Image (cartoon, rainbow, N blue to C red; front, side, top):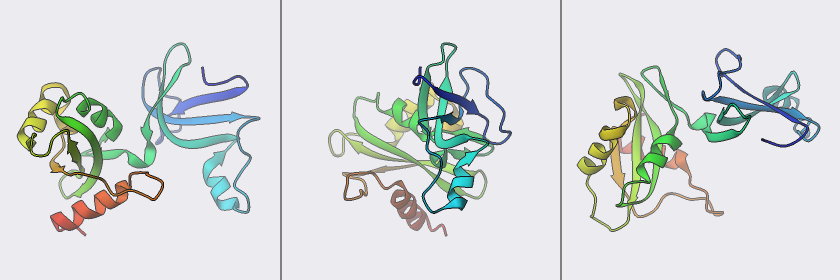
Length: 181
């Protein structure tokens, strides 16, 4: 359960309807412990809180017992050819590969599909892993549209001073490298 005196629901971001148990949607909360708004910003408050429900920006699923599992952030969701893809799902799958230390998945603009996936991978040992190995590993167990189109093997990610990965910089680098505007 989430916590006492806190209501939660998981909604379809396009329709605003509650999604069926086990399906992914945006997590909304309301209760006395939820903020009333942003100090000095009515616009941000109206954007985040509607009818008393706070839009968290978290993508989540809820099981039949009311347990909520966060699966990603709505701003990180990639839409490839009409399919919603949650990068954290592919990241979690790739963490199972014995030669992968860390991985970040991002969406890159694509003329045909709207967006495609790019994987930035830190291998456990430099040079121990190939794109073909990773692509084959993905193709064995995840849907074809979730298999990254681009792979980069790196030693580190762009980070903030507090140690947070800057995915937007990964996207910028990929766009520059691929000649995308």
